[in-house]
Image (cartoon, rainbow, N blue to C red):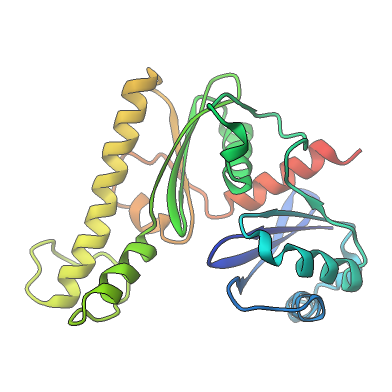
Length: 256
Protein backbone atom coordinates (compact mmCIF):
# COMPACT_ATOMS: atom_id res chain seq x y z
CA UNK A 1 0.00 0.00 0.00
CA UNK A 2 1.00 3.61 -0.58
CA UNK A 3 0.83 6.36 2.06
CA UNK A 4 0.45 9.84 0.56
CA UNK A 5 1.06 12.91 2.74
CA UNK A 6 0.13 16.48 1.83
CA UNK A 7 1.66 18.96 4.30
CA UNK A 8 -0.26 22.23 4.09
CA UNK A 9 0.05 25.38 6.17
CA UNK A 10 -2.99 24.46 8.27
CA UNK A 11 -3.41 20.67 8.04
CA UNK A 12 -1.45 17.56 7.18
CA UNK A 13 -3.66 15.31 5.05
CA UNK A 14 -2.80 11.63 4.76
CA UNK A 15 -4.25 9.19 2.25
CA UNK A 16 -3.77 5.43 1.99
CA UNK A 17 -4.01 3.79 -1.42
CA UNK A 18 -4.41 0.09 -2.06
CA UNK A 19 -3.19 0.04 -5.66
CA UNK A 20 -5.22 2.88 -7.23
CA UNK A 21 -8.06 2.84 -4.69
CA UNK A 22 -8.11 5.38 -1.88
CA UNK A 23 -9.05 3.38 1.22
CA UNK A 24 -8.71 6.03 3.90
CA UNK A 25 -7.98 9.71 4.55
CA UNK A 26 -6.86 11.34 7.79
CA UNK A 27 -5.92 14.82 9.03
CA UNK A 28 -3.50 16.27 11.56
CA UNK A 29 -2.80 19.89 12.48
CA UNK A 30 0.39 21.30 10.99
CA UNK A 31 1.22 24.10 13.41
CA UNK A 32 1.62 21.95 16.52
CA UNK A 33 5.37 21.26 17.01
CA UNK A 34 6.19 17.54 17.08
CA UNK A 35 9.29 15.40 17.44
CA UNK A 36 10.04 12.54 15.08
CA UNK A 37 8.73 10.09 17.70
CA UNK A 38 5.49 12.06 18.04
CA UNK A 39 4.98 12.06 14.27
CA UNK A 40 5.68 8.33 14.14
CA UNK A 41 3.30 7.52 17.01
CA UNK A 42 0.59 9.79 15.61
CA UNK A 43 0.73 8.35 12.09
CA UNK A 44 0.82 4.74 13.27
CA UNK A 45 -2.01 5.39 15.74
CA UNK A 46 -4.20 7.01 13.09
CA UNK A 47 -3.63 4.13 10.70
CA UNK A 48 -4.30 1.46 13.32
CA UNK A 49 -7.55 3.17 14.35
CA UNK A 50 -8.76 2.43 10.81
CA UNK A 51 -7.45 -1.16 10.96
CA UNK A 52 -4.50 -0.32 8.71
CA UNK A 53 -1.08 -1.46 9.90
CA UNK A 54 1.93 0.79 9.35
CA UNK A 55 3.95 -2.28 8.37
CA UNK A 56 1.61 -2.73 5.38
CA UNK A 57 2.93 0.48 3.80
CA UNK A 58 5.20 -0.34 0.87
CA UNK A 59 5.95 3.29 0.05
CA UNK A 60 5.40 6.87 1.24
CA UNK A 61 5.34 10.10 -0.79
CA UNK A 62 5.22 13.62 0.67
CA UNK A 63 4.49 17.08 -0.74
CA UNK A 64 5.12 19.90 1.73
CA UNK A 65 4.89 23.68 1.82
CA UNK A 66 6.18 23.76 5.43
CA UNK A 67 9.94 23.05 5.34
CA UNK A 68 10.40 23.46 9.11
CA UNK A 69 8.65 20.21 10.01
CA UNK A 70 10.16 18.00 7.32
CA UNK A 71 13.18 16.75 9.27
CA UNK A 72 11.05 15.44 12.15
CA UNK A 73 8.31 14.12 9.84
CA UNK A 74 10.68 12.21 7.56
CA UNK A 75 12.60 10.72 10.49
CA UNK A 76 9.36 9.71 12.19
CA UNK A 77 8.25 7.87 9.05
CA UNK A 78 11.61 6.14 8.66
CA UNK A 79 11.66 5.04 12.33
CA UNK A 80 8.04 3.90 12.67
CA UNK A 81 6.71 3.12 9.19
CA UNK A 82 10.10 1.66 8.15
CA UNK A 83 10.00 3.37 4.74
CA UNK A 84 12.25 6.06 3.29
CA UNK A 85 9.72 8.53 1.83
CA UNK A 86 9.85 10.09 -1.61
CA UNK A 87 9.60 13.90 -1.34
CA UNK A 88 8.18 16.01 -4.17
CA UNK A 89 10.98 18.44 -5.04
CA UNK A 90 12.97 19.70 -8.01
CA UNK A 91 14.24 16.89 -10.21
CA UNK A 92 11.33 14.54 -9.53
CA UNK A 93 9.38 13.25 -12.54
CA UNK A 94 5.92 14.81 -12.81
CA UNK A 95 5.03 14.89 -16.50
CA UNK A 96 4.31 18.63 -16.11
CA UNK A 97 6.60 21.24 -17.70
CA UNK A 98 6.63 24.58 -15.89
CA UNK A 99 6.91 27.56 -18.24
CA UNK A 100 6.46 30.40 -15.75
CA UNK A 101 9.25 32.97 -15.26
CA UNK A 102 10.67 31.26 -12.18
CA UNK A 103 9.65 27.58 -12.02
CA UNK A 104 11.27 27.16 -8.57
CA UNK A 105 8.65 29.49 -7.10
CA UNK A 106 5.83 27.02 -7.82
CA UNK A 107 5.01 25.15 -4.63
CA UNK A 108 4.98 21.34 -4.51
CA UNK A 109 1.27 21.34 -3.65
CA UNK A 110 0.45 23.24 -6.83
CA UNK A 111 2.58 20.93 -8.93
CA UNK A 112 0.83 17.90 -7.43
CA UNK A 113 -2.59 19.41 -8.13
CA UNK A 114 -1.51 20.22 -11.69
CA UNK A 115 -0.40 16.63 -12.27
CA UNK A 116 -3.71 15.27 -11.01
CA UNK A 117 -5.80 17.77 -12.96
CA UNK A 118 -3.97 17.10 -16.21
CA UNK A 119 -3.66 13.31 -15.86
CA UNK A 120 -7.30 12.82 -14.82
CA UNK A 121 -9.04 15.38 -17.03
CA UNK A 122 -6.60 16.32 -19.77
CA UNK A 123 -5.66 19.82 -20.85
CA UNK A 124 -6.30 22.63 -20.89
CA UNK A 125 -7.41 22.50 -17.28
CA UNK A 126 -7.74 25.07 -14.51
CA UNK A 127 -7.21 23.70 -11.02
CA UNK A 128 -8.66 25.71 -8.12
CA UNK A 129 -7.53 24.73 -4.61
CA UNK A 130 -9.48 26.25 -1.72
CA UNK A 131 -6.91 25.97 1.06
CA UNK A 132 -5.06 28.38 3.36
CA UNK A 133 -4.64 30.31 0.12
CA UNK A 134 -7.02 29.94 -2.81
CA UNK A 135 -4.92 29.11 -5.85
CA UNK A 136 -5.90 29.06 -9.52
CA UNK A 137 -3.48 27.22 -11.82
CA UNK A 138 -3.60 26.92 -15.61
CA UNK A 139 -2.25 23.79 -17.31
CA UNK A 140 -2.17 23.89 -21.09
CA UNK A 141 -3.17 21.25 -23.64
CA UNK A 142 0.32 19.69 -23.66
CA UNK A 143 0.81 19.53 -19.90
CA UNK A 144 2.53 22.89 -19.44
CA UNK A 145 2.05 24.79 -16.20
CA UNK A 146 1.44 28.20 -17.74
CA UNK A 147 0.22 30.53 -14.99
CA UNK A 148 -1.00 30.72 -11.42
CA UNK A 149 -3.04 33.15 -9.33
CA UNK A 150 -2.91 33.29 -5.54
CA UNK A 151 -5.62 34.81 -3.34
CA UNK A 152 -6.35 34.68 0.41
CA UNK A 153 -8.16 31.50 1.39
CA UNK A 154 -11.71 31.74 2.69
CA UNK A 155 -10.76 30.70 6.24
CA UNK A 156 -7.72 32.99 6.14
CA UNK A 157 -9.95 35.91 5.17
CA UNK A 158 -12.44 34.97 7.89
CA UNK A 159 -9.79 34.85 10.63
CA UNK A 160 -8.43 38.20 9.47
CA UNK A 161 -11.94 39.65 9.61
CA UNK A 162 -12.81 38.67 13.17
CA UNK A 163 -9.22 38.93 14.37
CA UNK A 164 -8.85 42.50 13.18
CA UNK A 165 -12.27 43.83 14.14
CA UNK A 166 -12.98 43.74 17.86
CA UNK A 167 -16.75 43.62 17.54
CA UNK A 168 -16.95 40.84 14.93
CA UNK A 169 -17.31 37.26 16.26
CA UNK A 170 -15.73 34.03 15.01
CA UNK A 171 -18.31 32.28 12.83
CA UNK A 172 -19.01 29.07 10.98
CA UNK A 173 -18.30 29.48 7.28
CA UNK A 174 -21.40 28.50 5.34
CA UNK A 175 -23.71 30.04 2.75
CA UNK A 176 -26.58 31.94 4.40
CA UNK A 177 -30.09 31.62 3.01
CA UNK A 178 -30.05 35.18 1.68
CA UNK A 179 -27.34 37.64 0.70
CA UNK A 180 -29.45 40.49 2.16
CA UNK A 181 -28.34 39.80 5.70
CA UNK A 182 -30.13 41.35 8.67
CA UNK A 183 -27.68 40.50 11.48
CA UNK A 184 -23.92 40.23 12.00
CA UNK A 185 -23.25 36.49 11.62
CA UNK A 186 -25.14 36.03 8.35
CA UNK A 187 -23.73 39.31 7.02
CA UNK A 188 -20.19 37.95 7.54
CA UNK A 189 -21.14 34.60 6.03
CA UNK A 190 -22.66 36.35 3.01
CA UNK A 191 -19.57 38.47 2.47
CA UNK A 192 -17.17 35.52 2.77
CA UNK A 193 -19.08 32.93 0.74
CA UNK A 194 -20.65 35.12 -1.94
CA UNK A 195 -17.37 37.03 -2.17
CA UNK A 196 -15.52 33.76 -2.84
CA UNK A 197 -18.11 32.74 -5.45
CA UNK A 198 -17.73 36.08 -7.23
CA UNK A 199 -13.95 35.90 -7.06
CA UNK A 200 -13.96 32.40 -8.51
CA UNK A 201 -16.24 33.30 -11.39
CA UNK A 202 -14.29 36.45 -12.28
CA UNK A 203 -10.80 34.93 -12.04
CA UNK A 204 -11.73 31.76 -13.95
CA UNK A 205 -13.41 33.88 -16.63
CA UNK A 206 -10.37 36.14 -17.02
CA UNK A 207 -8.02 33.13 -17.15
CA UNK A 208 -10.03 31.63 -19.99
CA UNK A 209 -10.21 34.98 -21.77
CA UNK A 210 -6.49 35.80 -21.58
CA UNK A 211 -5.29 32.26 -22.33
CA UNK A 212 -7.75 31.65 -25.16
CA UNK A 213 -8.67 28.31 -23.57
CA UNK A 214 -12.39 28.98 -23.58
CA UNK A 215 -13.24 25.30 -23.09
CA UNK A 216 -10.76 24.57 -20.31
CA UNK A 217 -12.07 22.12 -17.70
CA UNK A 218 -12.21 23.68 -14.23
CA UNK A 219 -11.50 21.31 -11.33
CA UNK A 220 -11.81 22.40 -7.70
CA UNK A 221 -10.45 20.85 -4.54
CA UNK A 222 -9.88 21.84 -0.91
CA UNK A 223 -12.10 21.65 2.15
CA UNK A 224 -14.33 24.64 1.42
CA UNK A 225 -14.29 24.07 -2.32
CA UNK A 226 -17.49 22.03 -2.09
CA UNK A 227 -19.47 25.05 -0.85
CA UNK A 228 -18.28 27.19 -3.75
CA UNK A 229 -18.56 24.44 -6.40
CA UNK A 230 -22.23 23.92 -5.54
CA UNK A 231 -23.01 27.59 -6.16
CA UNK A 232 -21.33 28.38 -9.48
CA UNK A 233 -21.26 27.04 -13.03
CA UNK A 234 -17.65 28.20 -13.35
CA UNK A 235 -16.49 24.95 -11.67
CA UNK A 236 -17.04 21.76 -13.68
CA UNK A 237 -15.80 19.17 -11.17
CA UNK A 238 -15.24 19.11 -7.43
CA UNK A 239 -12.74 16.45 -6.36
CA UNK A 240 -11.83 16.62 -2.65
CA UNK A 241 -8.94 14.15 -2.88
CA UNK A 242 -7.29 15.66 -5.97
CA UNK A 243 -3.97 16.34 -4.20
CA UNK A 244 -3.73 12.79 -2.86
CA UNK A 245 -4.44 11.45 -6.35
CA UNK A 246 -1.66 13.67 -7.68
CA UNK A 247 0.77 12.25 -5.14
CA UNK A 248 -0.22 8.72 -6.16
CA UNK A 249 0.35 9.53 -9.83
CA UNK A 250 3.75 11.12 -9.16
CA UNK A 251 4.83 8.15 -7.08
CA UNK A 252 4.09 5.77 -9.92
CA UNK A 253 6.03 7.99 -12.35
CA UNK A 254 9.08 7.71 -10.08
CA UNK A 255 8.64 4.18 -8.74
CA UNK A 256 11.55 2.66 -10.66
